Length: 486
Ligand code: ADP
Image (cartoon, rainbow, N blue to C red; front, top):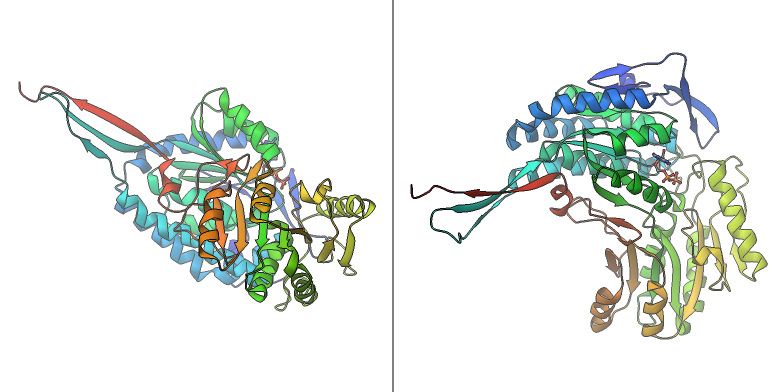
């Protein structure tokens, strides 16, 4: 077991009303996906813990939302600093429970913290309006008020940043939060609570309920009368269930769901750069992100060159335990994820795909899967229609711009899209034609706290990051003030 400089960051109980709530007899096991060994037993919280957490958050709301924006910002800035000071320990905890290479874990801690810094600043600049009046005896204006208690459900692929991306704007706005992390990765969430407590976040403002009863805890976070807003990151299938639950009491809902990102390479592109970014967007986090490249389209006359360079690049990836400093690909999250890759491969091969690299479980065993490259795929294959969420890359050819735009848009998803071309007119045409919330030209790098991240179609509702990311945590109040001339 890796050692931490500060072992008190390794918390194993839910965090409710600034207290660690332990159920000695009911524990969930957290597994290191690199070794398949149990690394922690975490108190398995229940529906009733979630109710306690919502009640604590409700009680804390009036106090916290009564702070000035500057006062809230000062606590959040302390939290931000403490996270940065503890980057190495937080990264180790993440690699232990999630498996990602330690270098990616360190980057996620810094990325996650950036939302706290950004919203600590941004909450001071959330403004209302003064509206020209329609009646001389009245004045019209709007202002923003924190919406109330926010329920959050987060996934295992970014165990830190998916929490801060929701909690930071919510807390900055004056809301209080109850978070259910994925039971596979509760430790990163609980470590954040320890630092929030040290930063001076008042009791009940931030609560984390870790438990295997996702449905029970989820029902509380989507249906409890004190929850004003619900925000979720995860699969589209689960998002639909949770949105339906929220409908019963008309809760405000934000969803960050699945993707099916196209990566399009035109014949005038810089092929070396396209290959480099294709590998980065396809294989980051072992292909387990909602913005990972899912379908690769390359123009006919450059496809051989592209595929040959892609093959060379993929062969250089190092599959290893995340704690190996050289690792670029860690394990998949669990056995179910590996089995899904097996079933994609069976489907692709039986329908005529050719395997240029990988295509099977890795010799390291456990949940490791070989980085895989396929060609000769066809439109009916599952890998071109479903979110792969794993290290399989499939390359398709195309002939015209019109054809590839139609192909890229032929999905119910609409999160991220990537394309490479040096034609400036085409850059703008694609930017406007792709039905995606995020488009990236000539680069696969885009994640930042200063810009909105959100999906179209069945990829989601709302945005996280940027000035947009805080708006949903407020209600707008319109005040019509009369009696001015009397
Ligand atoms: P994945 O399939 O990648 O694990 P999910 O959408 O199932 O993605 O999970 C994302 C988050 O949603 C996790 O925290 C998980 O525990 C939670 N979750 C899954 N099913 C439900 C449910 N029915 N109610 C509430 N939360 C759920």
